[in-house]
Image 1 (cartoon, rainbow, N blue to C red):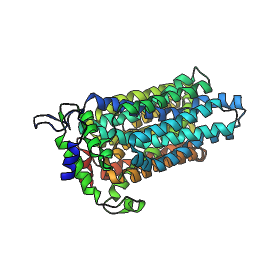
Image 2 (cartoon, helix red, strand yellow; image 1 turned 30 degrees about the vertical axis):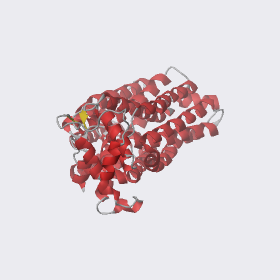
Image 3 (cartoon, rainbow, N blue to C red; image 1 turned 90 degrees about the horizontal axis):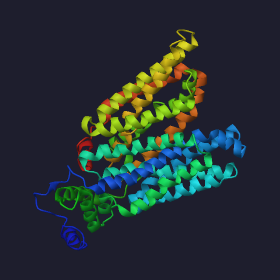
Image 4 (spheres, rainbow, N blue to C red; image 1 turned 180 degrees about the horizontal axis):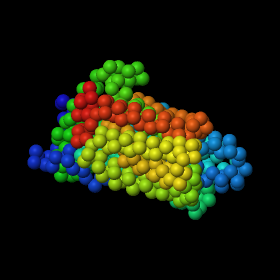
Length: 470
């Protein structure tokens, strides 16, 4: 305690007073403008993530024609993003623990920007694939560090809403690729991916580092300065600083976390919840539904480009109005349950449309059934399963496990995403209606999993959440 007091007294004299009288504002209820600025800068990484994922769809035929690529060569280009993202996810936890949350975001932005420039200059499939791999590595790292950074800087009553901005800006990035890609060529579209990288890189120099990370690595004075900036010059940070320091002090005597610690009985529930949510987020079939959405819109007599824009806008609107506005009012579990039930209904609508088509029944209502199923499914995903697993992942892990466990969870997400994308066509060849009934069955399992194992984290500090789970 004496050492910590000395550190507090050695703060920079130019900073505002950190420990104010007890009548100061309650920091768990308020946030300064710096929290919002820091979040907006961080979610430029989420926007970058969305642009990386959405880039291949509107550029397929332009790239294939100009570079004379076969379908198999373009498939490699599209899928190699996942391989880069898996590598990024594997290393993301260690990188963010070693150089900080801001350092990891800067590094990712540089790697992604280089990848986009290589794509822009590519004259053949090899540099094209290498550039795509680098953008995948960048967004794999960002998919972990952005939600973690936002969770660690946010007051508890705003943490859910601010954390869901991660998913909101991912879908905005996706939608922007469809919208911009409709009017510019593939090289120009690649250059638009550099813009969020530039904003993220330079923006991180104007915002504070995660206070929890600073305290974890022993930078006690910087911890207090950063926390005060995030809570405002008149905020009383005594209680929050004390809770964070006490919690981290209780972890200080523990050995450095390893993969074996993840299966320790005191940590296993954290891992099961984090891995399980990421597994279900992908295996409910979201990539398959989005992959086949254009063909479903064609069968309904609608433009596939218009259909893609429609469901992209739907994702943006429902993520903004649903998860972002309701998550800290209704809680994580109710939105997850509603989302999973809605996706089950969407899967059944799509599956029934294929079943009726296979038997030649009520052909006139099949297009409307299929399109409504897609929109219900994607809308339901947007209000819960899209954003909330990332929010909960950023909340539940103790900070000494966050790098290792968070990296594992992110790897599971990207591998699951690749596996669903890879197997979708094989399932459709086997049985179109059976494919969506299988996804519907996974939705049922997700509902059971959420009801039995996923905790409600609304309104609790990160330290309270971890104590509750243990």
